[in-house]
Image (cartoon, rainbow, N blue to C red; front, side, top):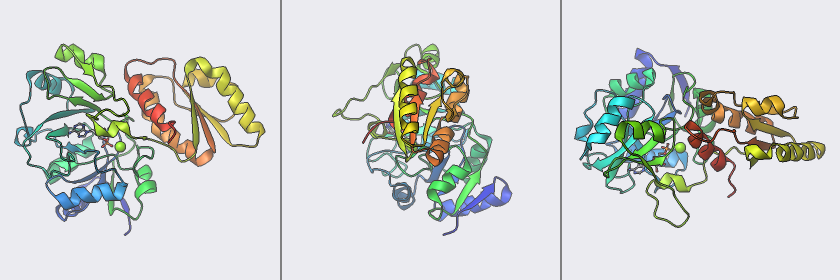
Length: 331
Ligand code: AMP
Ligand code: MG
């Protein structure tokens, strides 16, 4: 199968709709990362997403809808705080988990009685979702466990020959996946950190808890237990206080003839003594937006990525650190 990358226009949207209605999958842009979308009502189509990505079959998918879609047809028991949050942050990088009405294929939620819904703000994503006017189940459009894609080219690299069409909506400006928020209880609970932070949610909802997965526990958000976001080369992660250890490791490896690169934020890049640097940028938004593209650049150039954590660890850096530590995790 040939994989085409097309700009979003009437023609490509028509083709995308045809593919979706025929049970196929389409690569689609969002403001966070690119998604691999299929009709959420079509079990065979949803199953093919898992197959194409090599995704574990207990890791549920998020359903994407356009901003005027009536989500009450898909989910029930939407609490008042969730309505306030939706008003404040949607369309945008916030996924909300509700009690499902069981209308979409059971495969989407891997048998859970809940459904995760997202309304992306990306203009191209909105156009596509409006054009098909269906709930689109979509995980990130990468091979499972690999670095998530933030451009159409990244999707092509991972899925060339496995899908027919990638809608090209430019680089994803957010850069890390949406915040996943459980809205089935009295208080919202963060299942995955992202660009909408705990403080932002608490300010609107009055309170916000965070679910921390520990090995062996029943996973509320099954995706969080897996190694993830990983480049194909070796990786090692140092904390911000260990810059000199990172430098030493870099020197030792370079002297051994290993192609080592330091991955760090702009502040560390200025002071670190190394020639090969993957600079994530200075502001928090830049760091989030560049994380995956720099990890992908790194795996092309380097045999070893030596990552140094940013100094700041709160706000959206919580989500960034979660991705970075999983990218550098062993096993
Ligand atoms: P991805 O599609 O790769 O961005 O991952 C989607 C994330 O949303 C994973 O961490 C899933 O575990 C989580 N998720 C999707 N649906 C649900 C759900 N019904 N309940 C809890 N977490 C969910
Ligand atoms: Mg993913």
